[in-house]
Image (cartoon, rainbow, N blue to C red):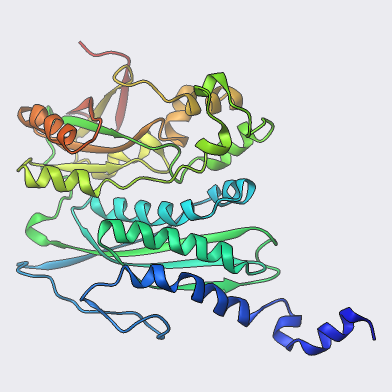
Length: 353
């Protein structure tokens, strides 16, 4: 009997089928400290239960409304595999989900993750979940539980998939649903930190043939290997600052898949549209490189990519200056990107009088 045959004979049937229970336990042991640090007084029990327990304590809310969202990071996972950096994916999925429920004014309570591979790599899984735990800890979110799946034959060896679910809460009288948006309201933008978690299929098609380790003049001396994995950022602290300052935030938009074309209209009331001044900001070099390499029309680029815009606040025109000052004081770099108008959808103009 060969050494390989002896090794196979000693392995369990499950391991011979390509699944290692021991690798799963090792992944949990590597990440459990980071996860435990996200637990607060509302988390009951520790890691390892069949379900996560969270005490529903919402303070003095009149009518607590739970807000939930589930999302993934798309083919950004392939970028992580290529550059060998997985921790950023954990930040990506947490911040993406937190931003999604923030649009309705919800504060995150707890987060659940799902990480799957064809062949489990405990260190890579632990890096992802530790990144998620760090993002949760920074925002006061409990990482309540998750699932690590090893599925040979479903996922290609070396690749991975990530999904996250967030549950938050908002007092119904403070729910932000866009119904109070009016023509004339100001639209204030905050920058993205990069592609965030959308547009990577287009980006990879455009950039795969380039040297990702090259310091490029058209990227201000930076490399694709550095810029593409940069994590999705969270906008909850910016909203906190506006709320504390008493700004009347009438609507928000998280710029994800669909870009500036499809995302903002999701919060518009009937008969109201948005005018965006494309001369109000400089599109970051990474996006220009993707657009040029892929040879896509500008309008298509604004739908496939965030083009440097991560989040929008819609506020009364008379509070635009206060909004800008408050965000700047909070360390943000906001700009007035446009205004609300009579109509529908998003209109792009290059410079508005």
